[in-house]
Image 1: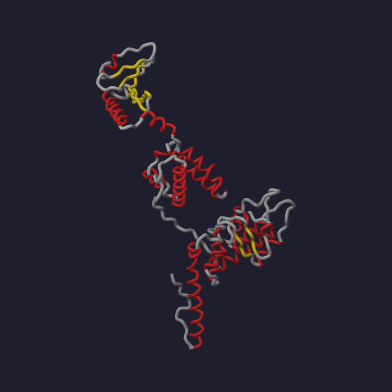
Image 2 (image 1 turned 120 degrees about the vertical axis):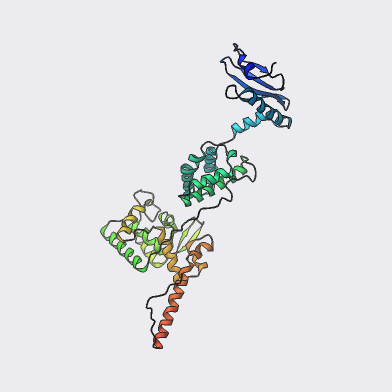
Length: 394
């Protein structure tokens, strides 16, 4: 035994096999000398009746005094009943964020989420989470890490907010699976970025232009009868795109679309006569259960985006998305005096708050009605408004 110092360590000769030299002042602090000439510091101690070793680091990278300081810390933790060697092995065995992503998709999303939600999770994981967190250990991720991750996606606020919401769910599951301590979710209560809500509604004139272009496309054959029918059904029923594309004949009755599953679960959608007439005019394909047919013999139309882009271009609706047809349905319903509670059921919204986003259209309808009544009365009284245009209340 000798006191391990820079000079004494460098004087130690290399042998044909590894050997250990123990410090004369700090029991348990030692040096391993390998046949290759590599020398590394370590501590040796007993825990649970067994002799354990914990590496500190190589000589040269660490000085003898730096290793001594670290040895004192490790031996101090042993005195407190800890086991640094076992803790290190446990840390090395701890799952990474990549493995948590895989388990989240296979054990949670695959069994509890709809295919569209699974696809969204897969996209956020592949494009955001994996590239940022890589192979970092699950237990090493802090709240500061998640805040930094969120901030890096600030130019895409919608993606940033959804990715962090998914992370929060992943960390909750990590707690359930015993991979993190209870209540340690670092993605909770991250302040969201403000999202600019994209809502576009077709005016009466735009609706007429769209109707004409759809008729022209059907007559010229520039779009299939199934594509034209799908777009028409979107605006006549207020359905979501996926609900129309995956619609089966078994779900169609003279008065309803009976969907066994949707974004919000089982739905019974009112089917107006105009929409029903479109449906029954569509040819069926033997052995194919779907209403909106595509090129696949047994499947449905998958990509409505291409015909829609051509149709909206021809109609001069360059900024209108297919989902805006659903917004248009809801806006017309509100302006027609449909009760919000009733509209919530028609639209399949999870909560009334979503439906109430269209409430301002009711205000406009009331204002128009009031203006119409006042105009008639003013005419009867022989008075004329100095402003012929309708005054809109914000």
